[in-house]
Length: 155
Image (cartoon, rainbow, N blue to C red; front, side, top):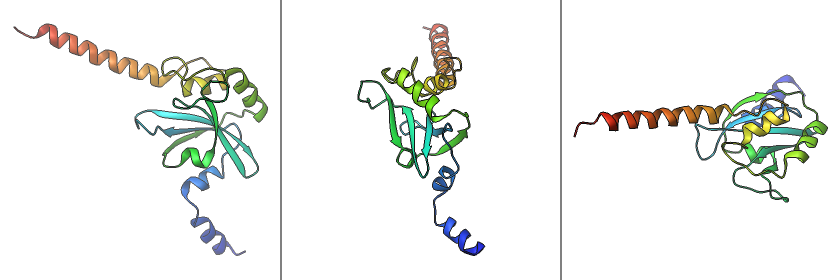
């Protein structure tokens, strides 16, 4: 195969397929959420040869034991989603699967068990969700502004 043939063959693939050809087990995909694009959604990749899956904490689906961590085909999961970033964790498949076993019965909750919490737990980091903090500050500020404007309103 000549180099030009290779370039043409690669050009027929979508950008997502090219990106996904580069991800490895343990990489975390950050994508824009389907329903509210200001929110990001996270999933971790497990790749076996050409077949790869994403595990994520899904707010709308339950797994077989009633928790929210589910496994999906990575290409189907990112379909119609914008990939924001790929974060390397260096986690092995066995490390990921062991953590998933421990966490798989927990249900999704935006404030205390969302997809960011799931990824933080996989990486043994603080149980923290920057999105929850950011939205909490935003809504608190809006509420305080409303109260101030309402109190200062002349009768």
